[in-house]
Length: 109
Image (cartoon, rainbow, N blue to C red):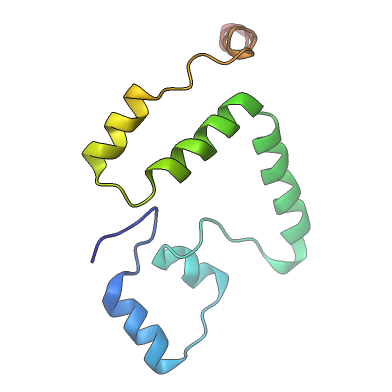
């Protein structure tokens, strides 16, 4: 079975899940590769807000380019996807210089 994205469960686990109708909690879903992260109910909203803030702090240009890259290469063989990325690169974002300078300044501290 071809594994896509971060999915680690594979066909045997998928069959087990379908045939047993078992339910899994968030921690188990993370362990199986069906989820990226887990947070307790009591801190869930704070965890979501922190993740959103971390994402929002990054380059909108890069986010848009990465979304297009993922959409354009989904399901392609690795070599074809990498070639697509090289030959259709979005280029340097308009905010890259400022972000690199901010990163370099942070490292000097």
